[in-house]
Image 1 (cartoon, rainbow, N blue to C red):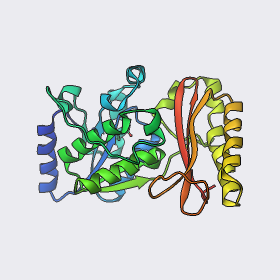
Image 2 (cartoon, rainbow, N blue to C red):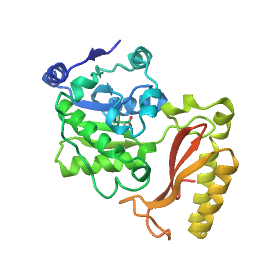
Image 3 (cartoon, rainbow, N blue to C red):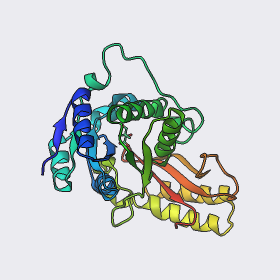
Image 4 (tube, rainbow, N blue to C red):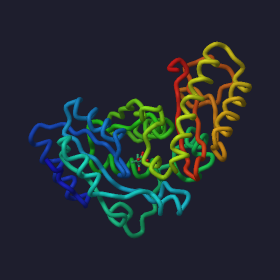
Length: 283
Ligand code: PAF
C-alpha cells in the first residue's frame, strides 16, 4: 500500500497522534531520498521492532558544505515512494526547505569533539547541519526509536550524543552496513561513479579488511595504514581524505590497538567521495 505523504510539521504531528491513538509505537527512518536497499533495511528493522514506520525524505541543505554536491544530490521522490510502497510504511514525511527552515531560522545544534574529526575535519559545518536537522525531525515526530546505518558511523555517534545531551526521548538504533555483492557499501552517491570507477570502488573494503587483519595480528598501525593508502590510490582513487584507526566509543585516534576500534576511510573516486568503516575483528 502506498504510504501517506505528508508535507507539513502540523500534519505530521496529527498523523503521529492518530497512530498513537490506535496503540501504535513509532519507528522513524530519516533519509535524504535516493533510496536503496540500505535504507530499506532500516525500514525493515523498524518494522521488525513492531513500530508503525515513518520515513522522512529531505535533502538537508545545511549539511552540504559544497553547493555543487547539494545541486548534484540525486532526487526522485516518486521512485522513492514506489520502493517504500511494498514495505507498508505508514507515513512519508517530505517537507519543503521552507517548512524545515522557516523565515528567520537562526538555531544550530553543534556537537563539539567527535564532530570535529574524520568527516568533520574536511566538511566544515556538515555535522552541525546533521545534528540540527535530526534534532528537528525527532522533535517533530517524537518517535520511540530512530534507525541509522553504521556506514555513517560518525554521524551515528554525533546523533547519539545529541539525543543524550538534549534528553530527546528516542532510542537511537544503529544498523549494519548493507553492501553490494562485491563489498561496496551501499550509498546514494554510488550511481555517480563511472563504470570503471564502479569496478574499482570495492577496493575500499578489501583494503580495509586486509589492514584490519594485520592490525588485529599486531602489525604496526602507521605502516599498515601507509600501505593501505597506497593500495587505494593505486586502484584509481584520486585522493584520500582520511584513513585512520579510531576507538569505537569516542572516536579517539589510536596509534595502538588497545580497545574496541575500527578503521575509517573517506576517499575520492571519479570526483565522488566514498566513505566506509570496518570494526577490527570483523575482517
Ligand atoms: O544520513 C543521511 O541521509 C542524513 O545525514 C540524515 C540523517 C537523513 C540527515 O539529513
